Image (tube, rainbow, N blue to C red):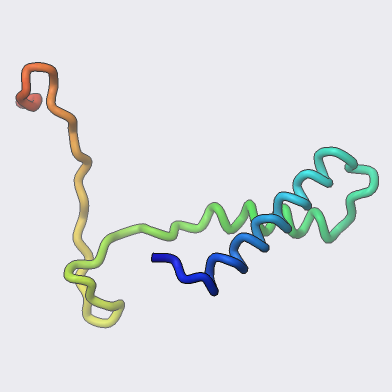
Length: 84
């Protein structure tokens, strides 16, 4: 569950980012360095890999082991999975 003290600042930062992007798109001649920095920074944050690997048993970073996950394949119409 997301805490309220995390949700409100996240919404405010998201609104600030959208304001900067819309200002750059709609009135680029009036947009300045601040709008460009906010838009580029928000876009750059979206490139960060947040969930790379899962932790086994909820262990923390110290001493925890990571486990690889495999993709789930939906069974075909016959009810069985592909033998390959």
